[in-house]
Length: 76
Image (cartoon, rainbow, N blue to C red; front, top):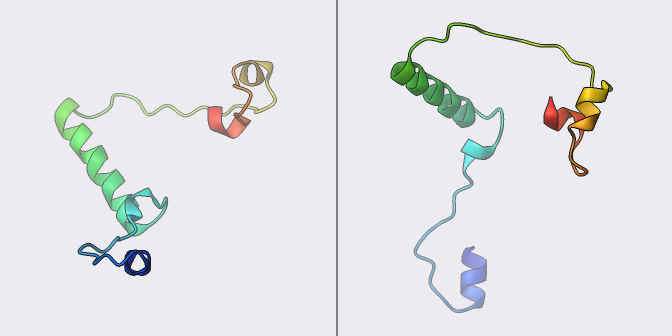
C-alpha cells in the first residue's frame, strides 16, 4: 500500500493490516467464533439439542437442491 501511495506521490497515513478474522482456523478467527457463540448463548440461553446428520453427497435430494455453481460440500 505504501509503495502504491508513493507511486502516486501520496503519503500513506494508514497501514493496512490483514484481518485474521476471515482466515479460517487462525487463532483470532477461532477466538471470534467462540465469543460469538458465547454471546448467542448469553442472549437466548443454552441449546436444547445438538443434532448431527450424516448424508451421502450423491443422494438425489442433495443433487436436486444444488445450484449450478455449487458443489455437494457447499450444501452439506
